[in-house]
Image (cartoon, rainbow, N blue to C red):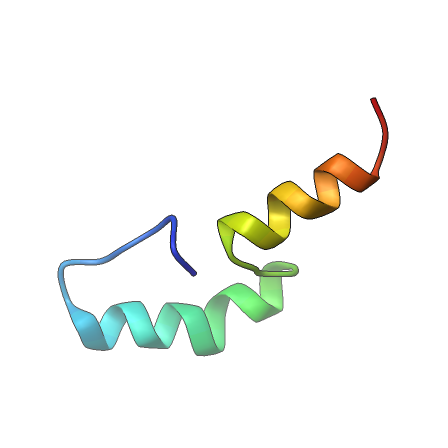
Length: 41
C-alpha cells in the first residue's frame, strides 16, 4: 500500500490488514497500473 497513509501507524496497519481486505482487493500503485494496462485501451 503505497498510495495512502494515516497519522497513526497503528490505525494504518489496522486498516491495511483488517478493514481494506473486507472491502475489496488491495495492491501497490505499480500492481494497479499493471492490471489497468492489461485490461484494455
